[in-house]
Length: 360
Length: 258
Image 1 (cartoon, each protein chain N blue to C red):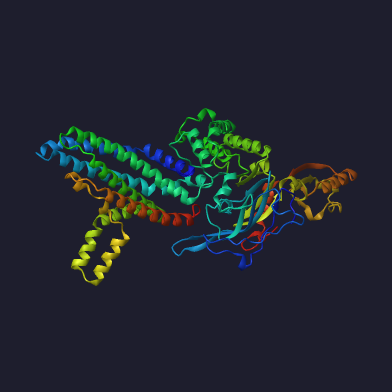
Image 2 (cartoon, each protein chain N blue to C red):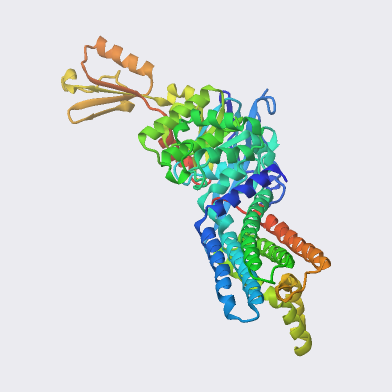
């Protein structure tokens, strides 16, 4: 498949068993990563995930439950890549595997060319977990000082950098307040502050707007847009479609632990996403059969109305021309670009995307 | 010291310092030491010895309580609350994290023993004819013992729940003080199987009586320098082994999604 840069995706077919690594803690054998013709390996590549799989054991008998399987994608510098999926789709597991918080059963993750198990690779990564929780006994400033030291950055710049980041997230007035007195929105903002503290090349944000009130969501969204405009590479997971539409360049939709579709959001206004509804009065035809210029496949007659649905602008234009030519009155026209939400629902309702199948 | 280790150790130390339980135990220790000063006049002719004995035992007991109850939950608490994920998402290794937590708790221990030791020396100083710097040797041995117990509790906290970690550590503390007796009993009284079991217990559990020279110190004997050196090597060796094993277990642990 071909996706316009900056994100490239290859839906993974099941890996040959020889490519699947053993249990966690052993060296991971990289799964083969297909590349687009002419794509230079690693050019501008910030994150590469290939054939990632993880299952968990649950219950008394420790039966394996699939977390994710065959997840592969690459994210290039400056891209905003969103992982969309309902709860339990595997978004957080994918992120946890990338950060080595859980050990994948199979697959390869490379952050700026380094294996993700090498902890130094995380020096250039900022991470905000879902429902962030920090040391409550610290103040906002003390917390950022703590994370700054963990990044091993020059101590003489600490105060200036912490001030800068506090200002960026609008937390300057609360820098001296203990975290136990922070609201959820404030915790989210201080969480974002620690994520951007080291001026990372890659930001990984797990549900950054979950649980926030509308004002908090807007503030965080604006902050993410700022970071996007600064050219940061961002991976965010969410199930809030409008937020993704507003921030992301590319979306990967997960279902049942698989990345089943990747879509370039800029290209979504064509083809798939357009719907027009027109209504006519059947009296205009004097009780006779419907005229042949109406697309029979998409026409329904009910409740004293004739409804026609078209799925592209050209078809709508042609239909309106015919109405004009045959002097037929149009009772109503309703057009809308069906966006990511419709795509998400379509992908989720597509039986090809259900258990055991991967679709593009 | 590695920068990350120092940061993690200081953070753990600050957390325990701001923990009310730590303060309560510290205050309680102070009260116990003070009560020794009040009770000792009742024991005619042996005031100094009683005071020193109760004081040293109290220091060991309160140090043990802090190490066991703070140590058993400090890693699990961060796992449960999720504070650990933002730390390990930074360039911090898991073994480094665990060692940082261990050192932080040891810093708490040192501070606590230092405060209690100072209070003890002041009270001893106020009792005529009792003051001696030989008590510092006893303080040091108590510190080594509790360092080893700290490593034991960190080891258990990576494998089992906080309650079990605390129980197992207290078990090691009790058996560790009896291990020489268990071995001797096995040799003198038991059959072949009992002898084997007592040998296994002796070598599997650290012998904590190595650090218990409190009785001798109270009765006027100084701790020999050679003993201090061997005890240091013994404590550091055991702690290093326990922390290495704990680090390996922790490195394999799934931090999310279990």
